[in-house]
Image (cartoon, rainbow, N blue to C red; front, side, top):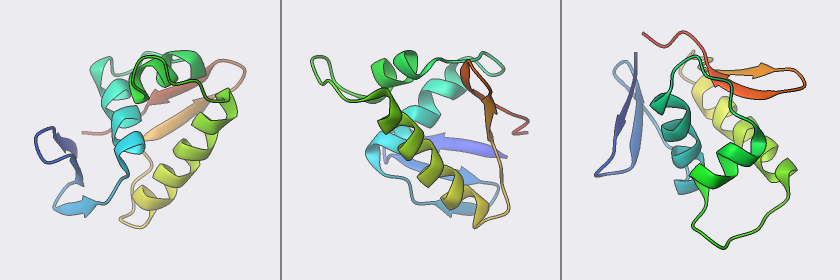
Length: 93
């Protein structure tokens, strides 16, 4: 059910559009690159930000929380927390 339009930077859950920020979109895109892989915050930062941008690892938590809220509005929970390790994409098909 999860799909991304890379050209228009739009996420979809089934027929619903999920309006993610650019950073949230990049996080989801990174997770989708390797479904089931657990990504550390540092790995997600590398995927979400341009080279040379430095942010707190807890900033990723904030972006994930906001993205989850947006997906929840359409009845989806694609991002899973793996305690002590990071985040992964859950069942999305």
